[in-house]
Image 1: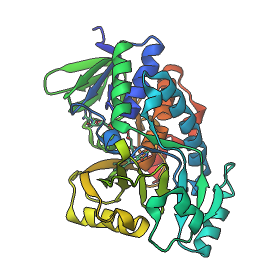
Image 2 (image 1 turned 180 degrees about the horizontal axis):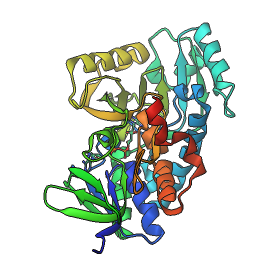
Image 3 (image 1 turned 120 degrees about the vertical axis):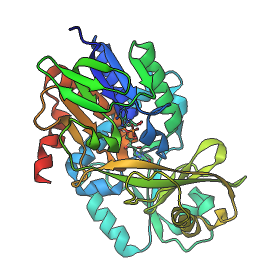
Length: 363
Ligand SMILES: Cc1cc2nc3c(=O)[nH]c(=O)nc-3n(C[C@H](O)[C@H](O)[C@H](O)COP(=O)(O)OP(=O)(O)OC[C@H]3O[C@@H](n4cnc5c(N)ncnc54)[C@H](O)[C@@H]3O)c2cc1C
């Protein structure tokens, strides 16, 4: 029987859509399914900080991947109509509370080619970002590398570009179970069975629970976000310490993010808002009476060792997984998608060798 597509992809987030664009460019017939409309549930929930987190300084493979991810994202934005307009702000201030934390961060970052950035004291910090005035600050490392991305705009642009290139994007269609056969893969939805040569699961934290696939240790970690606005008080870069404030749309400021073990619950809570309000009070007390604009919550996909799964599902031939990007999936999603596409097409991709899901048995 003729397959409905060469490749079916589950998930119309940054990962699934990036993989689809790459595969269709290589001549494959690609169908993307997403259980929800408009799709990209985690991707749209993200703040969009496209800058490696300091946590990555502890894992050099991840840091190298994140730096390559930043370059892939830049190429992606350049290739999309209006892509350059999806960038917001430039650079980051990594605020530290005291000399001990400054020295610890400098030592950690010394392993990285870019280092921690330039040291700026409290007075310079406030001169750079007047919104930070009014709280006892010690200082920060300033880096001009990286920026924010308008995540909704990015996912929409990826989806539109994929559709224009010939990818079938079907939203509001959930895969219920998967079956590997002698000839390929069957994807069962409520309405039909889709047949393909290969399947890529880029379904975020939902990737682990699909019937017919081996269990992978992967958990959802909820993040809550808050947006505020105060005329005259804006930010031009990310301020991180370790929660963060960053430039959002039209002079608004986004505050993020909680990290909660709350299963698949995706709602905003009073405790989450309290945590985010405390971040405002600590980093930018002048924003305490700013206008509340919006709050939301979303789920990250997190693995036990903090590294993504990018490769074949253990024990399967035609079924691949690309998930577990934690809080760095906007930064690394384009590279992850391109890498899984390369694996499917050519059977090999050195950039993601450290992230082979086969290691799951040892986690
Ligand atoms: C609050 C928050 C803040 C974040 N901030 C940042 C940030 O500032 N910078 C950064 O780099 N990263 C950030 N991230 C992480 C980033 O959002 C994710 O790592 C990334 O978006 C994951 O993309 P994805 O394509 O893997 O998954 P998603 O965008 O979650 O897409 C997966 C899709 O799969 C679909 N799906 C699930 N099950 C099925 C099924 N059975 N059939 C079909 N479809 C299915 C879902 O509906 C979903 O739309 C943040 C995440 C959160 C939650």
